[in-house]
Length: 126
Image: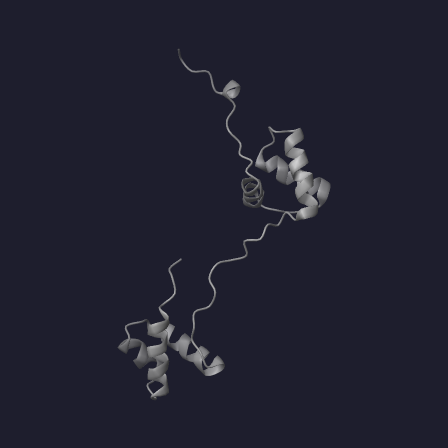
C-alpha cells in the first residue's frame, strides 16, 4: 500500500475548491487522479477537511490475557507443537478461532521461536 498524499497538496486542493474550481479540474491542476479529487471534494463538503485517514489495521492480538497463559503453558509442556496444532487446540479446548498468523505473531511477541531440530533432519548422502 502506498503512502497518503501530503498535507500541503491536500490544502492546495481545498483552496482550489474554495475558489470555486470543480473537483475534477482541481485534480487535473494538481496532477492527482480525478477520482481522488472527487473523493477529497466529497469529504471536504461533508467534514470541512481533507486530511488523510489513519492507515494500518488492527494489530492487537486475538489471543487475550486469559488465553495467553494457557498457550504459553501448552508450548512449555509440548515444545514440538506446530502452529496449526496450537491453533486447533485453541479452538477445541478454549473455543477461540484464530489464524495461523495470529498464533505466530503471539509466539513471536513472547520471543518463542521454533528452530528445526538437528535430530529430525533428513538423512543426507555422506
